Image (cartoon, rainbow, N blue to C red; front, side, top):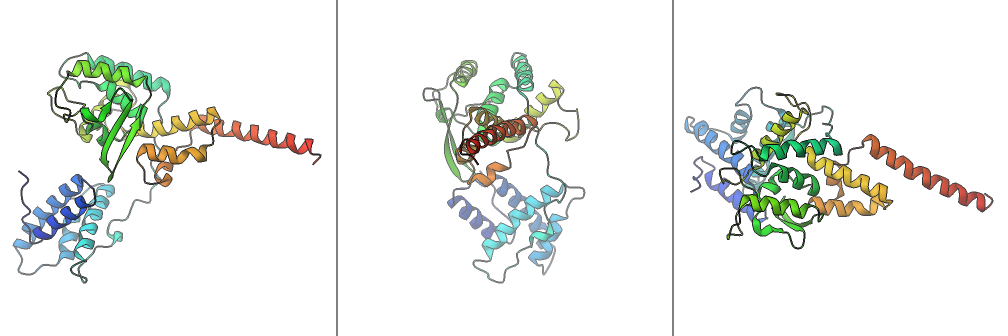
Length: 324
């Protein structure tokens, strides 16, 4: 049973969660943040005759030293949404400004785009780990293949249900991710891999059960998937034993997008016309969200240059034929 909120703002926090879920958001991570804030606020306000929400929010954001800026920024974003919700019924209510935890101005993180040979190495090691008993994750090879071949988010793969994997039609159904659902077709070559995983997993009459399971039968979480992939990258030698150097689990999604773009370049298709397709496939609201995944790799730039040369020479020949 979900514990109730206990702070002086308990009723408003609960109302805010109802509001967000009525819009279609699961808001699980946001709820976790609000529960932390609720517990903090309960102690903060309990020892004071008078208190102000501004001071409470500032004290909560500063409660721990050495935290990453991105963590503080996320927490502030959740509190801002809650405070903006409160302002609907209390126009003079306090809302913290974004300047309290501005986004980092450091250089943007450069995604790691796997090569095909690196992906094959990952799959070989993942297959070996699948065969080494209960200490290791079950279906790690299949997990890597699904992430690379479909570009799904980690949480989307973790939440897949048996009923949402249609092997006959070759399509996945992603339910309520980022506030919306979508169908994700996959290549026929992935079907035998999924069938083999199901044979190893064991059939189940309850189609609402998770598709992927841990060795102990529990469902996956996005964090668990992320931890297993980081461990795999380290075993293959792509990532050191500690630190943030090397590929991230989310880079499989970046790799999917870049490799798809490369294939379109090689096929000579109109990239601009296809970008909305890729955007819808990846679950983005518009192509602006997709552009963040389209990293310019050397071979991708080479493909674009080859297309430009072909177009330039073709146009040059037309001008000569017309006497221009």
